[in-house]
Image (cartoon, rainbow, N blue to C red; front, side, top):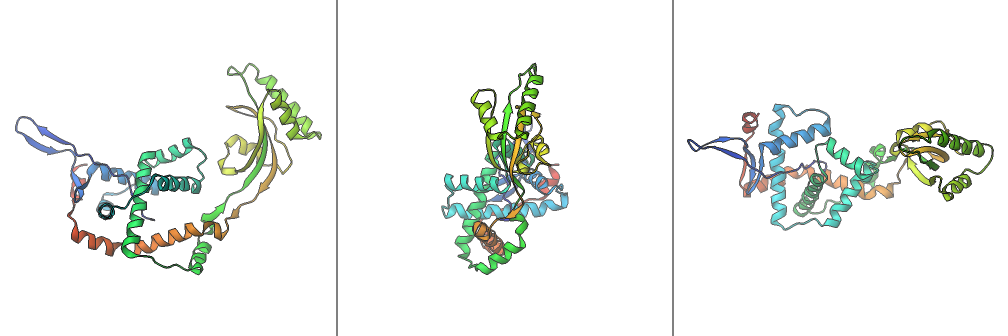
Length: 318
C-alpha cells in the first residue's frame, strides 16, 4: 500500500482522585472501532512517524485527517480479522528483506538507525508491514482482481526509472593491516603498507601480494566483490574517488587498521531490467488502484461496525 500504516498501541491510563473518586483524563480514546482503540498517545506517535517520514511537523489542523485515516485503517484490519486473513512469518520476513534491499540498507545496525530516525523499532516496523499486507489482502478480497496489462506496467516503468536505477558500483580487491590498540606499531604498519603499494605499482600482482600477506598472518583481505559506492565507508569512498580500473590507493586508516585497495572495475549507474522489477511494478499499480476504491470499502464497513472518533481530545491532551 502507498498509505503507510503506523504502529498501534493499546494502553489506556486512567488516574483516579482518591478523595472524591473523581476521574480525570490522562489518556483519552481518540478512535474506537469495535474493541480496537487508539489513544491520544497513539495518535501523537503516528504524528511523530509522519513528521519523520515527510520532514514536516504535523500541525493541529492536520490531526482530524490523521485520525480519520487511523479509523479507516482500523476498520480494514477489523474486517481482515473477521475474515481470518493472516500473514505468515515467511511472508513478513520476505517483505522486510525487500524493504531493506530497496533502501540499500547494508547491515542490521544501519537498519535499526533508519528505523530509530523514523521513531520506530524493528518490532514496530514488523507490525506496520504486517498491517499493510493484511489491508492489501483485504482489498483484493473485497474488490477482486483488477487486471493490469504489460503495456500499462511498461508505462509506469518509464515514469519511475529513477526508482529502479542502481547507483555506481566498483569491484574491489583489498588488504587490511591491523594496528595495535595503543597504536604503538602504527608507523611500522604504514611503512609495510607503503612497501606493498610500491611493489604493486612497480608491476607485482596486487592480488598475489595480498594473498602472501594474508597467508603469513600479517593481514586480512581479498576480493570484496562488486559494491555500491553509497554502501561504502567514507574513508574507502574517498580513497577510491579518483582511481581508475587497475589503480591502487595510497594506504589509509580506519578503526579496522591500515587499508590498501585496488579498483578492478567501475560499473556506471544502470536501470534494472523491466522483467526484474515487473512484480514490484504490478504490486504498486494494484495498491494504487485499490487505494482509489478504498473509500467505498470503508464506507460499507462503517455501516456495520461501531466507529467513534474524538479529534477534540487531541486538543484537550496537549
